[in-house]
Image (cartoon, rainbow, N blue to C red; front, side, top):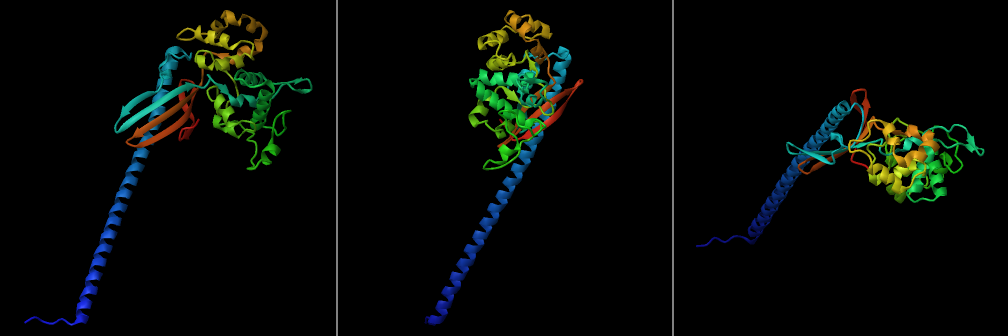
Length: 335
């Protein structure tokens, strides 16, 4: 004989079953959420560990670069040229769990933007006489296709941006011009740490900056413009044209670079023996001191990869006696 279950109790069992199902579903959701969070936390921890390892690998690239530079300087008695080990392009070394890569560049094979901070000596036509470096920079801009007035204007705005005074040059700009912009700021009135700061200077468009990239740099704490004739590349011939204040043509500059010995000149006097420079030498004796065959500043673009973690770093290495030291270090890789 079957027992009769009252309808009320049947409904209560149905409600209880629904509650049990809901509880099981909630527990499943919570468990899944906890598992996902644990996996995410583990992945995050692993990423941090890999990133930290890549950072230390990048620092080791600095040590390796300085070791190579020390040995090259010792072997060559201070002369710097492109046949030395430091000039190897894009060297990559395998390490545990990843790779280390880097490229060393001579910072005397580019135009040091900080050279425009040099104070003017004397007057010319009632205005401060441009320094040798200012003339060379303007000539570089002209050699790259800019008109004479535009080149002079950009030379003046750059000088005003980094020199110590607050007096505007004839075509320059100081604080008043920068403060009147949509996003106001002031002129730095100090030397640049990196060439990317050029983008903050009045008149320098993105295209102008990109055109200048292969030819310019900023050496922290140094306001001299010296060109190492042993390390300038033929693709940078316009830089040599500018250094000679446009007294030679682009083809002349390319010819001079191509005629350079494979291991460079041992002494700068050998460079001046080039027949193309015979007229320039006598007419521009004040430019001669801008040309050298050595260097004390090098740029290192280092990178390290550990699994999927990539770390990039730009360092400026300075020679001090027989040793090298890190002058500045920037993370992330910059143009």
